[in-house]
Length: 440
Image 1 (cartoon, helix red, strand yellow):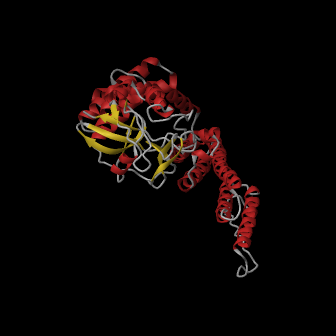
Image 2 (image 1 turned 90 degrees about the vertical axis):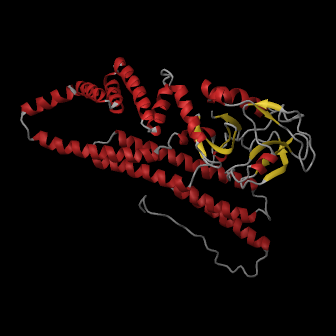
Image 3 (image 1 turned 180 degrees about the vertical axis):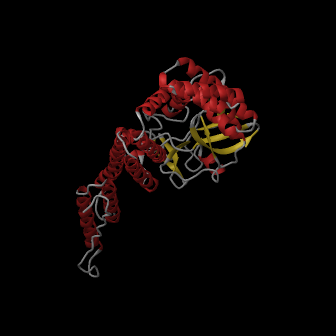
């Protein structure tokens, strides 16, 4: 069987199910699941392995009320997502190797086909971080540019086809034509420098910096890089003046990473302007992260991290815990604040009086009010902003205490507030920080 052929094995139960008890049916489902596991482990393609692990999981879920299969379910989920991640990584490496060693357009098209396979598979089969080994997940995330690589390979294939077409002409040319061709390629850097000068005189600063950057990339000329930065800065100013905020945003963003002049403050100003123009419930980037707008008033907006930061305990010690004393509060307002935001971004985040009220159902005390730049939502705030909040792939902590001491409420994947809470030391619940941002 060829590797590119689709494999689909459906296990059917030949014996009648009419006279079987629920326990016997459960045993039958359990055996079907084991057979699917065996099939998965003999598959070569990671897509097929993932498919049959998934089927096994579905059958085991039907068995749960009659048999303790939780350890096996956890193991299969890890296998399923690790298989996906590892398969994706191996395919990505294979495609990169073909692309880097490509000599013909067909080589590039072969690489493009593999990148396309990765891209279309990950659209319908995303990885779940908590079920994937951290090192494998981190490596797989690096392969998330498969769509860009598809386009690049197509472009390189076209360029290579054009080069081969011209090369066929060169073969039939005389020795003099070959010498002229060599001279042309030796002058490529000079040509780019000349082109950059022409664009600068015509006021096309975008093309100017791009050509200077090409010169720098070819011969590592520091002066060319400095000119590229300067003209990119001019291009950003020009674009902003002409109303092209996308180009200005892109260029100030790149320049802020180079710490060039006041680009970082201008970039933050553009970020805040974008936030200012959004509607409640929309997602907007800030500090290279996506945030969802929950509220807007008095020159400030309330933002909630759109994607969770990851699974973490609410508090590592789990003794006499409130939001005020929690380790997650300390981490958000120290390490996360310092490491993930620039000085201008930090200055734009407002220090907020965070009101900590008891659990409305169980009357569990919430401790003192605090002043924080980052905080977790309360049960009341989730209810208030319910329409703006979206469903998620994981549960996330709230700062309202749960039913018992040293437990905290959380939000389920479907936005349901679980006010009875969970132990604060639980490591399977994620963190979605909120902040008030000054947009004046």
